[in-house]
Length: 376
Image (cartoon, rainbow, N blue to C red; front, side):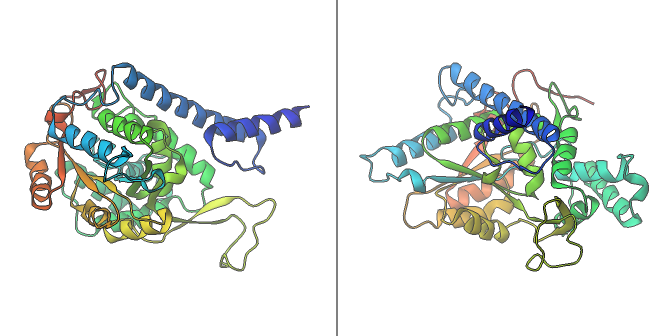
């Protein structure tokens, strides 16, 4: 009877999540894992419904703001059947950068940077095994936090370091590790955890687009496996719609055999290889979108010069009307931005005809009314 119950429960949770499950996993572990993911998904759906109760879908945006009007005008034009700009549902694809576009990248720095620093300097199960090189990179993360300056090439270097620091860990255990870290209290804000640091007005944009027949992808420079965990707690988005730096996965018993020669066994499990294919930045974002999506999107959201390649690719779609938006971190009261940080983004938006989004002037809230920025 217990076996039949487990089978039914597995199937029901799988249907709810809209994803297949690992039938070979320990039933108790699987139920706990999927149960936690389900609760996160329920929380995301509740936030979505709460936003809609406020009167309209973009209730956290300032009425009359140029960016809100541009977005609504675009969506109306491409979803109205009588419009010359109508786009069929299958071709309504939007791509979003994560850090600084949907999710805070200044708490006090990128999530994956902080995760690495925690692993090397604070995790009692690993820090004594960390190499001098790993500690050097972790200390560089602290320097980035202190100065706000990222050394040339460091984003690529730390991408490989993150992979090596978790080499051999199972994919399932890595997801648990990321969730545990994300559940810590935010260093820079009262009223939210690290994993809850999503820009609430941008969550509304994703909800708005999905309700108008858009398929939404998140395309991040961070590790795809990390981003999947972050997204499941903040967005109503299945993990298959996450594009990120590709961390190579192998079988526990594979050893040095290439995947083309190894047969995954009954008692195998997926583990992190400690290697990445390539950091998902600039042109790599374009190639990853082309590979995973299979067609050119029509709508793009970014926040920095690192998203220009992705934006140019989207705007080059010759079949349909396109649009591009950039979040400008110009709010130094509710977020850790400044007009000086945002100025270059405003400048290249003006040069290219893209729409800037002002955190300070276009949003009624950033993280929600119950969240406040800490003061030193």
